[in-house]
Length: 298
Image 1 (tube, one colour):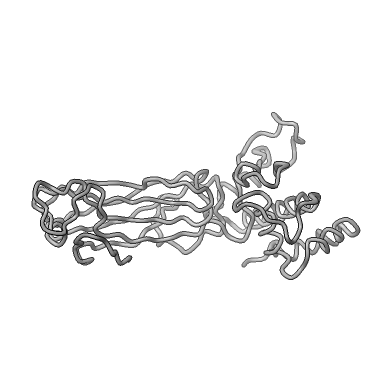
Image 2 (image 1 turned 180 degrees about the horizontal axis):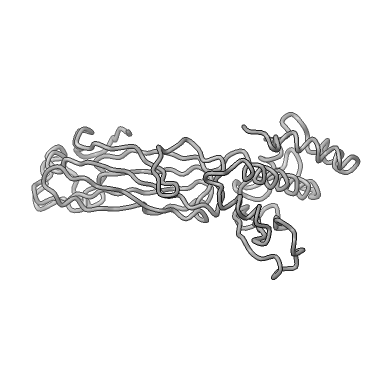
């Protein structure tokens, strides 16, 4: 729970009794974990939380009159997409204890990175005669807290879609294809797209089950992630501007490649790995398999 240092009165934190966020998976609620290691951009995130507010005590503690109106709001922010949105908002009409059930489904295509969930008790209207030092603007925050959920783990993650490869230029029986833009300075989110062939049922099913993968699904996901890492680094190493001292904008394709490179090959130089790829591509592929720990539980 955050401590607010604000230029107006706020009620004691005890006016709000809040339950932990819950993750809804296949209709069942589970405690919000620290991370979802098998999450991908096709997976929506459903969240629920119950909050109890003593409205009368909150108004009194903030020096607000009886006709002041309060509300509860939840807002999400995703570092991977730099997007922000509302998870729920509810007016508090009761004069005593009011219970609010916050519930929302966040589209996976809008998420990524660290998902921050902020819940806040706010002033909707300060009323006719707020007391001395009471908040006088709608939207003033009286209480808030924040929870986080890591969606982006060690595996390279990017937007993906499931399609029928028969309607593309790719081989009909290929299981997946990673599209990569040519410009290392472009935004990574707009330069990477993983295409899954719906005709290859084993792979399509593995991604559909990513929230609760079976053993076979984990093996498939591990193979896809390993292959995507290989394709990304091989692509990066073909660019002359991809060097150890290169400077790319945050969240750019080049920065994503550099982060992946140093994560998988700490202590190694780009020059050394480029030479390895050029002169011993088979060994490069085997070393990358070891680095991504393919088929190994982490």
